[in-house]
Amino acid sequence: MSSPPIQWYPGHIAKAEQQLRRHLDKVDLVIEVRDARIPLATGHPHLNRWIKGKQHLLVINRRDMVTAAARTGWEAWFKGQGQRTVWCDAKAGTGVKQVQQAAIRAGAQLNERRRNRGMRPRPVRALTLGFPNVGKSALINRLVRQKVVASARRAGVTRTLRWVRLGQDLDLLDAPGVLPPRLDDQQAALHLALCDDIGQAAYDGELVAQAFLHRLIQLVPQEASGVFIAQLESRYGVALEGDTADPAFWLEAAAARHTSSDTARMAQRLLDDFRKSALGSIALELPG
Image (cartoon, rainbow, N blue to C red; front, side, top):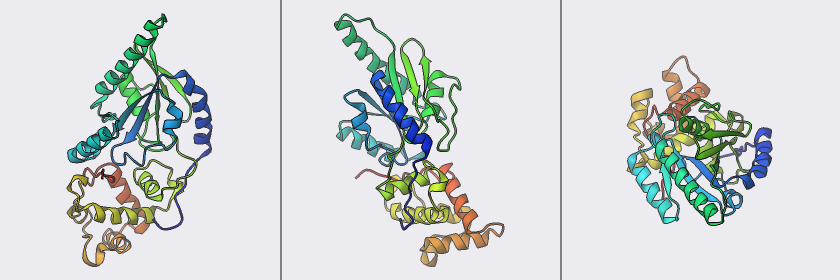
């Protein structure tokens, strides 16, 4: 990705991280939520330091937005890292019951240790943690079976920490999305921008759209990615091949074909279509 670099660390995230650190000692379990399209880019580099030996449940959300082959590959990769994953689609509710069951099992282990020490059992206190817009609040609403926290597919909706009771077994702490203060890995930053996991003020939409087209070309040989270049031609009337294999030229050609558009609007349309899976199930990151 060419300059300018993508950086985004708004004040509400810095404030939320300070609050988060004060609450970490009160939680027993960290439910980390990542985006299935970019499970590496949405992993926080400070997570292990924050967990400090607490139980960790890794939830990969938006399973519907990647191919089954990509999901299988990532499951095997994370297992090789010693990390079990639970995959879900918080918007539709798929896999949410498995998330709840895994959290309750973790709580049962905690309470067994409490009983062995002569202490009374209590609901497990779980923190939902992750980057902005990975679906933490949507997951909580599904778990509670009602809309108790604000949720939308854009970054920065949750801005304060809030406890939510889930039956007698689980207390959930919904936290704003957290980011490292500096995005040193610009490829990962690009993926965050593409998936709308950082604010749009952090990047140039046309440059990001061009980088997206370039990434699609790279992913074509990997069947698990779900990329089919022919879909671009079918949807926009311009093939990404030959002279139009140049992403900037493709945007110009697509904008010209859609006479009510210019390259900036065309870029935004392309990004919006990817974000709502109108281009198919596309995994921007694959293991290996």
